[in-house]
Length: 274
Image (cartoon, rainbow, N blue to C red; front, top):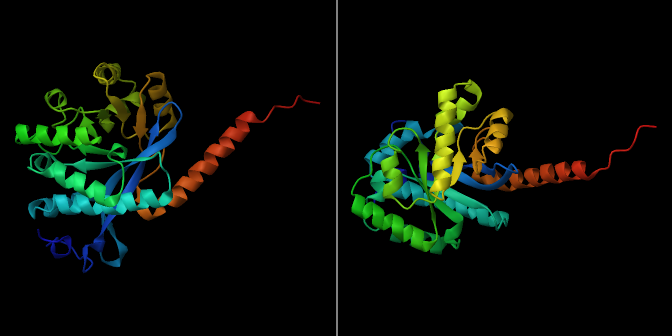
């Protein structure tokens, strides 16, 4: 396999694969707004420190056949940061494209990597992105079943958009359903048709026994409405922007201080006015 360091990316790059950086975005339980895990996102540090988004480098990685190599490197960075933090109850999720799922031996490759990194598979979820239709359904299903048998979670990403369709939902043994951010923005639009679609998507997830995660939550009003709708989890700028994996420790300390301060405030008795 060609290494990431030799990748002919169409922009200036560092001389080795150190240009690839794992960024983490918090995922929270809607009922409590407590962080329970992070989605791992890819970034590329170019020359002079510029941080490039996936749309600027993923096409080249995809064309070079290096998606698996990128995934393994992101797993190394993110899992190392998580284990170093000592937070035994937090989970990580990683993105997989349909063409990766259709590759024989993918599940075995990931199982070997998780064992090598020393993390329980139950703490890992793989999110199937909506970039293309499922290919080679037989192989894809075999990989999905092996990952589920291993204990990993499996999420359908961006549900309600692109290729994340009802057909895909019934074809694969998903454990989580991630609602596309465009559905979540409807919470503040006042459009009754969009709200109906969102409510039915939540009901569909519950009926199928899936954990439902709302993406793109940026406003406290959206969070309150999701709480009223009994949505399970949420992700978005309201809870935190993507951050380098190296900042995980500092984030967890600050989050713990915030929760402790909030708890202390609710326990402080209100003194009657004199």
